[in-house]
Length: 205
Length: 205
DNA sequence: CCCGAATGTCATCATGCGATGACATCACTC
DNA sequence: GAGTGATGTCATCGCATGATGACATTCGGG
Image 1 (tube, rainbow over the protein chains, first blue to last red):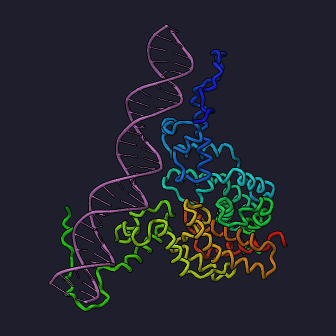
Image 2: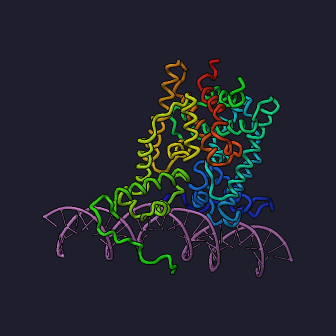
Image 3: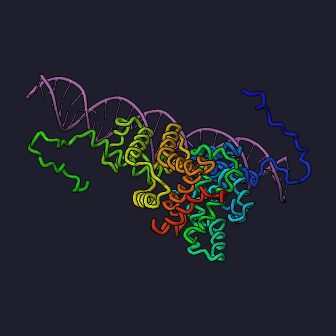
């Protein structure tokens, strides 16, 4: 077909140093699979993502998913773990951090954890892992904040705040609500902040 | 196999009156399929629901779905239409109506329209139909309210309010956030109202 | 240089899905 | 009561998916 697809442009690496430069590198392949999986799970959710797609994007054979991770659900779990190591707990009450979060999501899409908030997954293990992440990163920090501020029903209100934020972020990503989807993070920051703030103040006025 | 599965317990209906009592009734079967589909689409979403399940719950053969509706996507569309005929536009700013909405959702689960807000569907026709419903029933009424109240960015804010509400309702249904899921509609009404209210007031303080 | 393990590729299987069409059964009209 | 279209049942197809194992290739150590 395409002339591009010629013989591998291999520089015949003179065997070179016994350096980490390997053409076959399981570790690297594993990483690429993980990355591709994270992207696709983020874009389409767990169910709509196929192992073949993951393999294609990672430039690896789908069968390696089974070999390296055990299967698609285990790959998903690995994705969650990787995400949790990278991301620090977010302070939703800090405008700057909130804006950062919105920007990051606008750029990279909501994470699998976010999606799991509103979409129950088939595999209970997967569902549970996602929930743990959600609490550690969003609910608990906000709940602590509310508690120290003397907000009643701190936990319930924190959960409502996170749920509302999740809805906003996911709707933005889904494109169902046109103006919301096309608005820049800065444009919605004020309102989103107001929403989160309202969960703390409602009724206590 | 099982003794239960004996000859059809047919009461030999003496032919009886020429009354509407028919053993074969396409209209009724269609209805049952529609009901079952609505329930299942509501519980698990479009993708996770199979035509065989729908048939089983409806007590009808799955092949009738193709015959009566054209296929699974068309059945989904019929579900949306049926839902739209039943449900009137909801006024999210009225506490009583909002409570009624929350109660209804707590009882029957969120409708397919609600779910479509945050989960893009594969079929664009389906997605579009869901969006139309969403605007007519929730966004537009709220937007009008905001406009007459002189709220700036009425449309954007209305969309954010609907998105937030959707997140709350779906998270409640998903069971991911424990306290939110177990709370009664009355318990969260105040906070939810505050959230919607906040979309109008934020920044204009 | 050679061997065994690690790594990657490929063909294939089993399963579940939606769809289709052939066939059986019923209901209504004449 | 015979015929005809409507209605329901069943077997099966084609397709996509995740998984599996056989095979090919490469790497690294002896």
